[in-house]
Length: 124
Image (cartoon, one colour):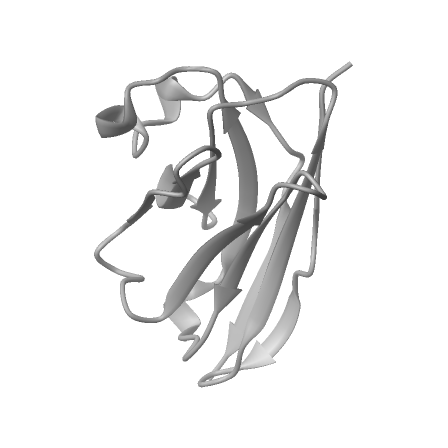
């Protein structure tokens, strides 16, 4: 049974940092991603990483502030979030992809499994 378990969300002031973790189990994946969904908005791409080569991809809105990384020995993906802004407030979801089309990793449809999400709130 595949499980993606996120942790690390919380409340932080603007300018602060948080690190999200996503622990994956049940099978191996080709890539992992983070998406976020604010109230009343669609679920948007944040970042993605391939398991094998460690190639990374970021949404323009988080480039230079967020860093995605992986620990293959722990089957865990991290999202380090720095210089947080109130507009980063959202539920953050971890997702796992079995596909190999890295150009499509910013698309929700490329992912086969999803976690339940973790809330990130950034106060001004």
